[in-house]
Amino acid sequence: MKLALQNILHDRGRFSVTVLGVSFAVFLMVFQGSLLAGFLQAASRLIDASDTDIWITARGVQAFEFGTALESRVREMAAGVPGVLQTSRVCMAFAVYRTPVGKQQVVALVGADPSVGRRFPVPNRPESADQVSPDAVLYDVSDRKQIEVDALPAEVEINRHRASIEREIHGYGAFLGVPFLFTSYRNAVRYMDFGPDQAMYVLLRLDKGYPLSQVQQSLKQRLPEVDVLTQDEFAHKSKIYWTIKTGAGGAILTAALLGFLIGLVVVSQTIYANTMENIEEYATLKALGASQALVARIVLAQALICGVVGSVLGLLVVIPSINYAKSLISWIYAPWWLPGAMVLPSLAMCALASIVSVRSALTVEPGRVFRA
Amino acid sequence: MPDHFLGVEGASVSFGLEQARVCALRDVSLTFEQGTLSLVMGPSGSGKTTLLSMLGCLLSPDEGTVFVDGVAVNRLSEAERTVVRQKKISFVFQAFRLFHSLSALDNVALGFEIRNAVPSRREEAARDLLLQFGLGGKLHQEPNELSPGEKQRVAIARALAGNPPILLADEPTASLDAEAGRNICQILRSQVDKHRRTVVVVSHDPRWEKFADRTITLCDGRVQRVEEEVGVV
Image (cartoon, rainbow over all chains, first blue to last red; front, side):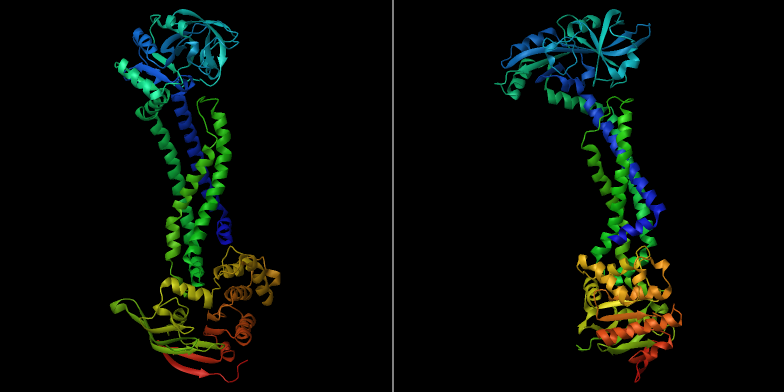
């Protein structure tokens, strides 16, 4: 394998180009992968944050952001189904937000009952020692520029109602390009001019003694005019909507695929050029009795060495880049396994790129060693 | 099946198609005994290199048989012929054909790798061979840092890695000056005398005649003359 290493090190210019090609591919794949992972996570973040078993939505709601009002009897009827321990309400609507300096913009206002879950951003949960008023409004730190408040608490207007922004939270930044504001359910329906018993989503916590599927089935029979989804089902539906139906996931995946293809072409071209430049040496190897496996291993090793070096370089660049990007795209998210997992397709890419070269080296006629 | 160590029997080889067909060897029968150095001479186009390619299992005759160690190798598959080369045959070339990116030591060690020597012993064995050929000070030089004579000695050391019994040399002194050429002649002769290798040298260089046990002259693809030498150096 020393021959493989020395051959690529001998032509440092070509080696650098190959490594840069692989690095670029790794960079794009990891970065786009992080965008996709973050996008998927953000698409169902609020659904995942609830600590409930079942979500009841109006018929055909595709994603959390597009809920419509349910009739008030839905909550009451659901509460009467055996196995339902607790009901909570969540609503979400776009609202007009006026900053303290009078600038107006659209925000996504989310209101929820405190019982919806510990992780769900709701002010003044009964069990917490929040130092905010029950009707406080919260926003994510990444949306600070758009919210435009200098100090907390700040008096603002939401849909022409006076509101008090009291706290910054983390991890619930703008996903639609519109900042989220969170408040109590009671407060939110007031801003949205909803009836006090109306809800967009009714969330159910079940008694552990009842099977989830059985309760879901009972609810579907009792409430045929709405969708009864487990939390996972609604999260999945929301992710599918945002990634596939809007085409956003496709665009992100296409960019990742493009990175893969660019890497493939660059590595393929440079490894092929290297192989053809050294084709006489492969003929010599074969004449001296080298097995096909040894010849193939040498070419493949060259591609994989480029793959490993390029991947390491790509990772060294992409990880700080993602950290920096978090300040601009709050929802970007690189799972711990993603950078490592992207090394595998990169190596596969290099192996794939070496196929034509391996074939050339294997088919070279050893008898040409006697030609001048 | 002839029990000679190496040879061809009734071998004919031609290249090209139809009107462009050229007959490189016509019904050639030759045997090469173990522990001999044979010199193959003849004008350009006489079939010397074709003969060497056949003996080296790099080319199969259209007709006739090539045998190595009593086995008709032209009936073997490509993979089987590769194994024959790996175990029994090695080559020395006019243009050295060293691996340009490897040092002298690594070139020879690669010879051992090709012949499946134990990995832990390759480098040591390669060093020993290079020391034998007076290249102890050039172990880590790359081919472009060596003189032509040194390159050919490295190439011979690589060819001898794994101790193959047959050594086929194609114009091994053509690129060398007189002194380096004589040195190579002596080295290959010593391989015959000390190790009973079978060496076949194709050359135009008349210096070889006094190192060879016999001289075979080819002309137009046929054996024109076989001369046994009496006073080999």
